[in-house]
Length: 459
Image (cartoon, rainbow, N blue to C red; front, top):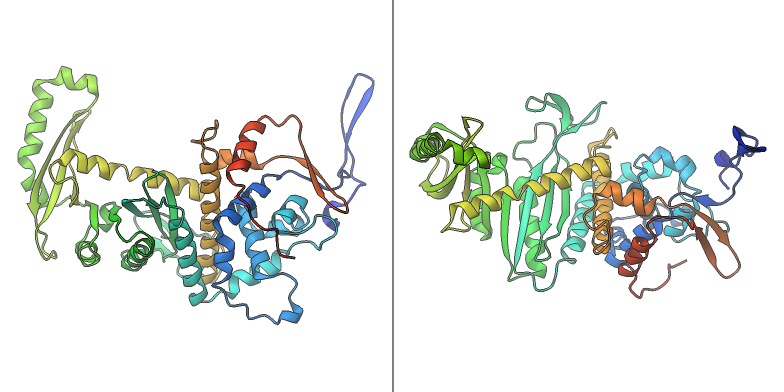
């Protein structure tokens, strides 16, 4: 047992119940509060995520001196992040947790403890740019492998988000839009025929962001999708920060469809003036009708060519009066050519990607990019992305239960945070889980969905 958690001299007294004293001590032995870590490990083995990542990393260490393989270190880190332990310092005590050891293929009592914080930190800081690229590529391929074979349409949602920095990290810069010193990572999500929005990749960028890395991540994503689904129609969807000439030219070169936001300008305002005035008239003369709906909205479309564009593109405009204020919005798109309204509603669905980013940041602590080296932070971001992939697999396995629409934090609280007493005998390892656990039926459903026939861990 870990020396930091084996102290049985501590005693905590609570109010008595009747004539009986109530006393608590840290002497219960091998008890875990994270039995659900085994579900995360099963999701990993079903997807083959960690194994795919390990194959892309060159282990420069001397094999005779290695106690923890790259596979063990990655699996330990990713499973811990999924269970809510995003800080490497947590392994000072967590390395002895019996459930985490079992999830990583180690016996809880007879096998050595998992790696400590310094070993994990050395791994994160040892990654080269080639290792990171190959690991990111491997994660993306395993995500695309989960799409149904008969997928005919694939939607790529690209968005940037703020990652505030509070130290002296490399390439952390002041961003005037957010008013903070930060990174500005890119998050790429993929949606197939099953309607599940999966995190496919995450690219760390400096605080200035801009268009850095945008074309590269799109090109790689399209290549991976076409590798498995050569006949699928690919649609790129992104907000106004990506609606520019370079993105449109790239879409045409890659022969993919697009639905991108456009920033307003004087020319767009002039071309949509008639629609905006008609919307205002409808709102004025039929105010009672629109007040019941809360909003007066009209759609239109026209051909438009910005100065940097090579040709004209179809622009959809949505003119809307909300609470007496006119609010026009624009997108450039080549889908739903006969219906401006359908094209705009398709664009609005990108809001789901923003919800997934919130889950990624809040539930899986993707903002823990606190290493000094930029490459170390990029690798750490990929570890959190891998945890997000496994959590999505568990969310899918929970379909048909009360947690089928639950966010990652709820999944963790209700299914992963499960107390158990761990007993290792000569022939079996037992996890005696709580008899009063309220989500036993859902836990059983997830276990069944994540339990294909697979070999035991290699020892």
